[in-house]
Amino acid sequence: MFQLSTDHSDKSVIGVGAHRACYIHPEDPAKCIKVIYNSSGTALKEIKRELSYYRFLNSYLTDWSGITRYYGTVETNLGTGYVYDRIVDFDGKPSQTISERYKIEELKDNWKELDEIISKLKKYMWDNRIITTALRPHNVLCHRVSETEIIPVICDSMGVTTRIPVAQYCPWLCHRKQKKLFARFDGLPLIQKVYQYKNQQE
Ligand SMILES: Nc1ncnc2c1ncn2[C@@H]1O[C@H](COP(=O)(O)OP(=O)(O)OP(=O)(O)O)[C@@H](O)[C@H]1O
Ligand SMILES: [Mg+2]
Figure 1 (cartoon, rainbow, N blue to C red):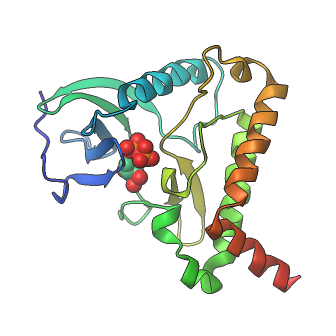
Figure 2 (tube, rainbow, N blue to C red; figure 1 turned 135 degrees about the vertical axis):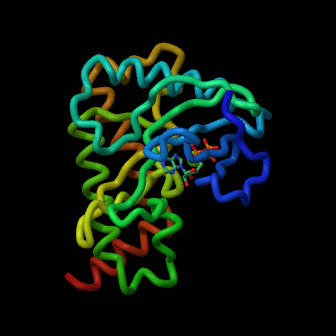
C-alpha cells in the first residue's frame, strides 16, 4: 500500500483538480497516482467512464503522444489510486497546463506558441478520434519535449457522457461532437484573445 500525503501543498503533489489529487508515484517518478479527495458529486462515475474509454482506446489507438496512458489501480492510504503516465518536460520541470502557462494579460508575447498548441491539439484529436466530455485549458498539459517544441497532452475528462457511446464507434458522429467541443473551446476568453492577435497580424 502506498502512503500519500493528505497535505496538498506537499512536494509529492503535482496538481489538484475539483475531485482528484495527482501525486508523483512513490516508486516510479515517470508515473503519477490520482486519488479522489472530494467524492461529492460524480467523481467515481467520471473515473469509471474514463477507464471504460481507455479500454476502448486500447483497441485501436496507436499514437498515444497526446494523452496520458493509464496503467491500472493501486492501493493507497487515501483509497484506490489510479496510475497514469506523469508528464514531465525535457528539462525535468513538471509540465504546466495551458491555463498555468498562458495568462491572458501576457499573451501578447506568446500567443503564437499557444496558437500552435491549439492546432496540434485539434489535429491530434481529429486524426485519432479522441473525445472528451469538455475541452478545458486546465486539462491539457504543455509537454515541452525540447527547447522549441511543445506537444499538447490531454490529462483529464476523456470519454463520452451518453449512456450508449455511439460517438465512439461512428467516426462521423465523433467528428460532429469534436466540432462542438472545439467551438466551445474557441469561445473561451483566453483562446479568443489568441485569435484576436492572429487577426491583427493578418
Ligand atoms: N498525467 C499527469 N501528468 C502531470 N500532471 C498531471 C497529470 N494529470 C493531472 N495532472 C495535474 O493535476 C491536476 C489535477 O488532475 P485532474 O485534472 O486529473 O483532476 P480532476 O479533479 O479530475 O480535475 P477537474 O477539476 O478538471 O475535474 C491537473 O490539472 C494537472 O495540473
Ligand atoms: Mg482536471
